Image (cartoon, rainbow, N blue to C red):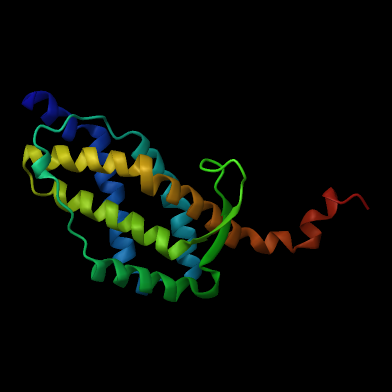
Amino acid sequence: MGKESKEIVQSKNVLEFITVANEVCIFFEEIEKYDFEFMLTYLQKVLPLLYLKGTMMPDIQVSNVDGNERFITIEQWEKIYFSLVNKTGAKDAFYYVDSCTEVDYKQEKGSISENLSDMYQDLKDFILLYQKNTLSAQENAVYACKRLFETNWGIKLILTHQAIHSLLFSKLKNDRDFFMGFSPN
């Protein structure tokens, strides 16, 4: 099992995911450098790539569950969160309908900053655990990241990407010339 696990944790899909996840984490850690529009434009482009790479994370069986660790503290999470809130300001909140959990669909309120901070925490924990460079740590990192993608940050990424798209292109909604050809008038 050791050789097979080693091949999985060092596979092309895992290494490519590490590359994208690391770039996203660095971006969040340096968010103060960027203005709001650049931040939105960057995230508009990188979030679909991160999602794609997340879908390609392999299944793996963990040989030692004691090798799983979390590293990001609440203080580190809050630092990223408040940096993002400072960028998004009044445009942080968005509304969505969670159609997967309820029969009676109701509108939910989301936060771009909270979702991105949660994603940062899962991605950074993955990177830090993977960097421990033991087979047990890397197995646990890949396993946890794939499960968290499926249950947590994958859906948050999709909802946040939709909110970012709306912010970037909301000016088109108000552009009468753009919609002139589609008007019944």
